[in-house]
Structure formats: structure tokens, C-alpha cells
Length: 438
Image 1 (cartoon, rainbow, N blue to C red):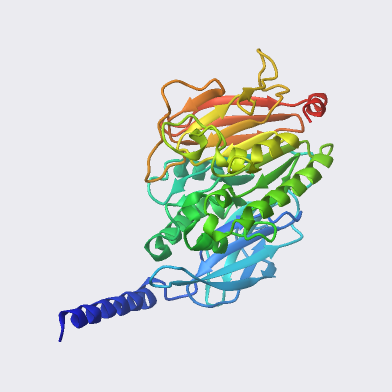
Image 2 (spheres, rainbow, N blue to C red; image 1 turned 90 degrees about the vertical axis):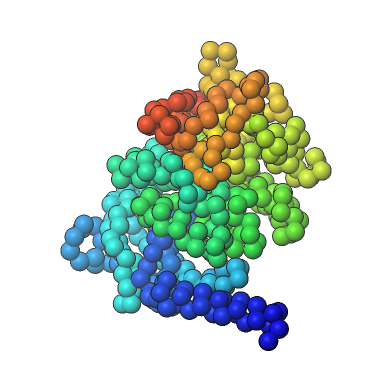
């Protein structure tokens, strides 16, 4: 036997063994795992998503009692997802939407089928309308390894501190790694948070493998764009999630840049006409327009792609967001925390010297990518830029409290300092000031 043939046979046997181990030992049954919630924008609903390793029915049993029978039933659908790695591992992703939920009521649920049930989880249905004060956790760039912010996020969630989570791109590092096993591990890690709160997402650069297939398959977001861009209403805010990655991974389709841009413009027009009901417009996208980090990322360039568009002129987002008066812009990608002064085209537009965030004349940018991953923290350039207000090179995450139609409270929590609040700012837009800015 030739050495080449012998080596080829060995590789084939190794591959067959790996597949056999996966099928026989790793995930042989249909017990649900990786359970997480999302809100698809319809009041009185909540969507439950989970994974099994064999085909099964998709059912959620739910009720209001912690123990005892769960009287309500909801059924949904499942789809096979085949990862793009060499093993072509197959997952079954289940989705069930619960309806007719009472606003603000607490529910207990379990998901699965007669082939296997999850344990019970609890969530609180989102309140309806505009006259309430949502509280959110906001962060990006959390990995399956070194997720420094996760233990505190779990405790905060169990104590009822949040109504929803905004994960601003970059998950697991990476969901496709090791034939998507890293994605499985990450989804199990976040389950204590994500099974209790709507876990709302946007794609980052670390999701791009196989055309963002793991991201698209594993999360259930509003709209019909596979979670790449969508919007939803929460209390007095309209929240827009979008993909900065369409500007960078052009081989997946240059047409996506214009398609998303036209959608954003249309959505912003509608949101602007609805300012009386929902005064705040908040965006989340992964790669920032500005940053003062000591690296070569896009946001360190004067004409950053997200800000100015392709070739510095095509479908840039800064002019669009400024035109329609976006109030708050959340970003990640840089593994640090940075708050900017209200800014447009490198000019600072503070409300006043004493109160820069009261009636600001430009959007407020927050970069919150320090939740923790294997790539560690990102340093800053030594001298702060004139448009940079606060810089924190510590692990942590952001809390946002949308108090009402005029006040939003933002805090940065440091895990390096045992939960200390290292940034604290109120953004205040009285309705008169809002009309002047727009």
C-alpha cells in the first residue's frame, strides 16, 4: 500500500470515528438546550428558541405558578441547521411564540416534547404602550472563554434588574469554531440570562463565517431579514438593530449595503413621525463610527466606512442618522468602554458647558465591547481625542434605564472593580429641545 493511500484511509477512519462519537455519545437525544427568549415586536408575545440533536415536536407549556401544572400550550416549528464545518454537524432549532400574555405578568415555562423537556424557567412579559420605564443591559464582544461580565449579568438578571438585553455583536469567539461546538457552549453559558429575558442581537465580524449562518440560525429576531437588521418598540423608545458587516464582507453581496440603507431610511422616517408617542430613537450596530483605541480598526480612520460609506461617499450612516435625529448610538467591537460627547462630523455639539447631555445637538455614541472574550481588552491611544468624554479599559457592561420620554440614564459597571459604577450620565431631551435638534 502506498504511503498516500495509507494516509488517506487513516483520515477517512478518523473522520468516521469523529462522526460516530458525535452521533453516539455527544448529543443522542431530543432534550432541549440553549434556551433563549426574544421579542418579535408584537405586544403580548414572547418567542422561545432552543436546540435539540434529533427531530422532535416544538411545544412550550407555560403558566403563572412556580410549581404545579402548566395549563397553557403553544406549538411552533423546527428547522434543521447544518453547520458549514467539515463534520457538517446538524442541529434542530425550535421556535415557539407565546401569545396573549398579560403585560408585566410573570410566567413559568418549559419547552420540548414527549421526547424530552427542559427544566422550568421564568420570565416577565414586557409591558405594553409607551408609559413605562424599560431597563436594559447593553454589551458586545462576549466569548465562551473569559466572559468576565457574565456572572454579574446572571445575578442582575435573577434579581430582576432588566427587562431586556442588547448584545451588540460578536458572540462566542466564534460560533462556528470547532464545527460549531463553541457556539453550542456559548449558548448554554448565556441560558440563565437569555432564557429569562428577551436577548436581542445584531451581527458582528466574528459571526461572518459561512455567510453568518450560525447567527441567522440560532437567533430569532423581528422582521424578515434573518436578524441582520430590524427594529422594535420598547416603552418610549424605538430601537433599531443593523449590520455594520455589510460594509466589510462584500463577497456576500454588495447589494446588501443599499438594501439595508433603504430599509434604515424608511424605518427612520416612520420613527421620526412617531416622536410624540416614542420620543427616543436608539440604534445598535457592531463597528463604531468613532473610537480612540490604539489599533488599526475602521473606527480609528478619519473616514471610517460605517460613518462615510463605501469609497467615502456611498451609503454612509452618520449623515442618515443625524438627518433623522437618532438620539443614542450603541456600538461594540473595541474591547473597552468609551462615551463620546454629542458629535457630528467630528464636531462636538454639547447642549451647554454645564450640561453637555441636556439638549445635545447631535447623537450620543456609546462603545461597550468589554464584556470579555479570549482577545482580552483593547488599549486606548495615550491622548484622548477632543470628542471623547470617558474611556474605561476594564471589563464590564452597560446599564440603560429609559426613564420616560425625556430622560435616559446610562451607567457603566466595572467587573474589575467588583461592580463599581465607573461612568454615570443622564441624557435629557425636553420635547422643545428635541424639536430644535430635528
